[in-house]
Length: 267
Image (cartoon, rainbow, N blue to C red; front, side, top):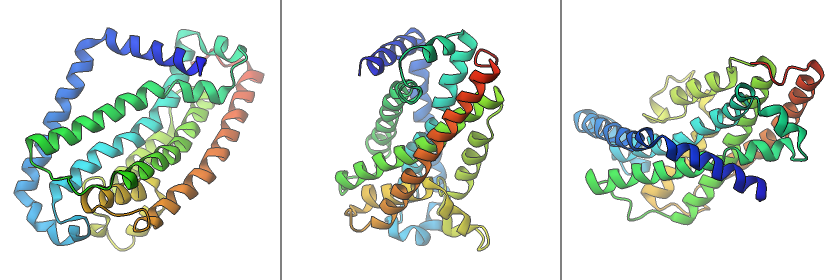
């Protein structure tokens, strides 16, 4: 806990030292939400029939996609970015020479990013509800919380793998590039996966973001219970149980190789 608190204080101080950037990010949320609101006014009725299970409102559908897909984007970048910054600032070797476990360093370095992303999600939902009239009154918060925790856990496995590639390749991360782009295309962030071609739609089943967004939309827009989203919960749990230990093992191997090569400080 002391290590986690130290990382949190450091990252919070850095974030607050760039106040203009801090404020502009929230202004960007308003413009992003407004853009999709007016797009939904233009063609939202055309896809309403394909969104019946989520309530038929395209703007509410895409609002949740924009808000909660940020957790996957964060997971794919936060761990590797922490390693990269440590390499460039010359602090990575020092941290790894301390008694602190590598997994603790990775997880602690992402705490502020997750807290800030949660704040961004709250702003997305507030702008959507207070300014543009999205109704979330029927949301099942317990189901949404369970989906959120499992989503973060499953996304983090991919993020740890991304960090392992940074230790190995130094620059260039195929995991973030591949999963980020493919998930945006196939996981239903901006449109339902039912609009995908028949040969492409099954590929979405291999992406944790697909189940995260499906479960979250059902919970927030339809008030679905834990039982009603059990398939999404089981899928996310499966991703977590497989990816987390596997990627931690791979990251340790990448770290061991970097130590043997003496390349921890290289970037």
